[in-house]
Length: 464
Image 1: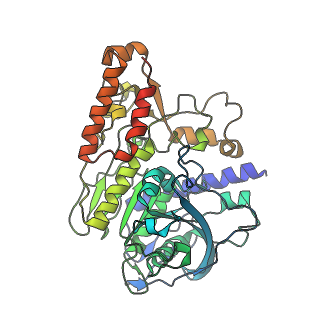
Image 2: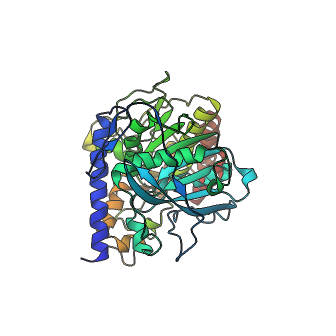
């Protein structure tokens, strides 16, 4: 069996396991046990709040070979060097769920500790090999001086690229919740230790998307009982994205971000927003957003899909959700509520979503891309047939991945010059309307000034 086929089969198993976990998460869970992803022994949780044992952490890992890079899809020209950030790799080891493990963490933080904001995000590396939540919020995270910590829970991709460096790594699915608790407790220790620059975060949140949102959801029963060595709560908030699961209630704020892909799949939570202690909950659905980012992702360069890959700026709006979660847990500023995407169940127009006259979704959190449109944004895309020549290295290395990625991605259909002229008369009017929309959204807190230039640059590229 070739390595490409093996990796693809493993990825498929992981995807199926994540779907199984999402279904289990919709059924809730108690504080005594969590499901094991992919089968095996279930995670055994303590009956009462219990301090986790801190793992042993190595010195910085610098060899053999290069560190596996899980953040290859940052916007062009806005990488770690641009923001004066550093990424360092460490191995951690210990005991979780009654057996030993060893895995890696990657710490991304300001090179100058004085720029650290005091806020940190932890995520499990996606089984595809990406730190997607850092990628989806990198501009906001690094511009703000936040820390991002990645925990590897699947070594398929790192081992494929550097088996010698990662040969001693071993972690099983049923250990993941306790390992995530141990990393959070390690980060909250004061001082946190050399790996984290001896910095002391005020608050830490856990984030995840798709398969790693499932990992996050599977962690929540453990959140209710795992504690730091001084018996403090470990994580202060949660941000699961690209999931429609009905998530259990917990004792800290949680913002869930389903995308249009989940809306079209019609498997969405009906859980209402809440403000009471034990039910601090929001659902944010951004009109125009798809399950995966196809604007900055290297997997879509060149575009392997049949239709134009969506250039909707996923990062600009996921960063709104992350900012609101940080404000909620750090400043006590309650996150605003938002309308959800409207569903009419009428597929005659090609979508169960309610669409406006421009074929864009109604409802949800608004943005200039759908309110002052120059294109229609939809889901799901499909793979080009025949396949494109010379696809990205990641697509080329994973059999059937073009179909999988395009199915999770969005597409856009640009308006013709005649449509644009009918809507706006001329380009100046169009750009002025985009600016007016941005002004209103920024004032309401639904668009971050950090992304203003990027959104206006997109408007400037539209040709009449």
